[in-house]
Image (cartoon, rainbow, N blue to C red; front, side, top):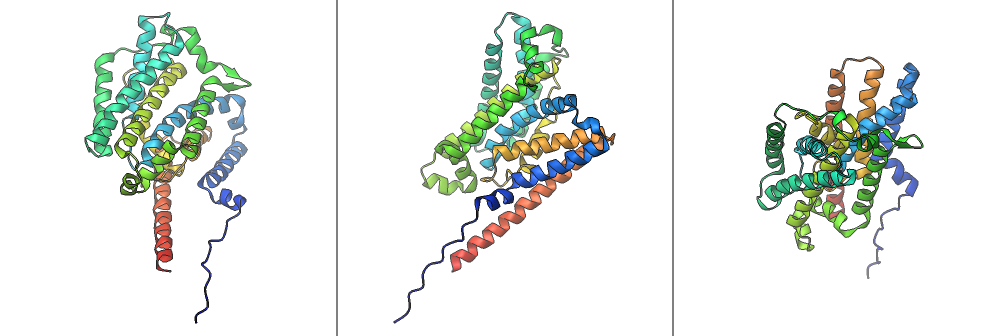
Length: 339
């Protein structure tokens, strides 16, 4: 007769320890150290105007990061976001030039609709055309930018051509917080809840973690991938309208190079390029961290090229950390399966 050995149950980790272990907590700590050290060297770094400019500059990147997070969670990538932003920014301005009395909400809806249409092209290529996302969106990055140049034909939209009610959206504020920033925070909260609390949101994690298992679980993977790219395009379209409101003057080069900044922010914020891991909050903090680094370098009068070098170094560091954590997780699962 052998004695019965009770099955081991994993030790429960206290909630406070889980919070401290989260990537977001370490990013916030780095952010606090960076802000305080920069402010110690240059007190004007924390002036009201500096903080306002920083918030406005980071907000548009953080908004595009939300859509990129959806795509990255499914182990894909959307390189075309900068071209979508640039095209929608110019077309939104062109609408105001053609119809100065057009209601502002209608232009917002048009920008979102144009972005969703462009995102649908990406989604169809990746989900149903089976074209790798890197190739498909790299192609549309240039196609959309080419269309932009063809439409613009060397011209530009200037702030004087925009209605004052629209321009006021970027300059207006509530208790010192710009409307533009409040809108971006609202979008981030909505998508955070969507990913965390709704079945459709959890499906992005399932598809990115194991696509075969997602199929077996009854998830319509193609439709989920298409939806992710449509949402990414729609959010980039909204960002294009906000870009127009923020800067007033746009041409065919608007938003160029933004795609790498957005991907870097998402990955630094803990969204794994291997899919299935990450949060909108973490990606937003990643965008804020990169924005603060850029502003700190300006405040400290460091050469501009250091910003890109640090951005690249942070991206490599974040990817390295993700690879190490993924290997540790796989090793732990393997050891458990042999017990």
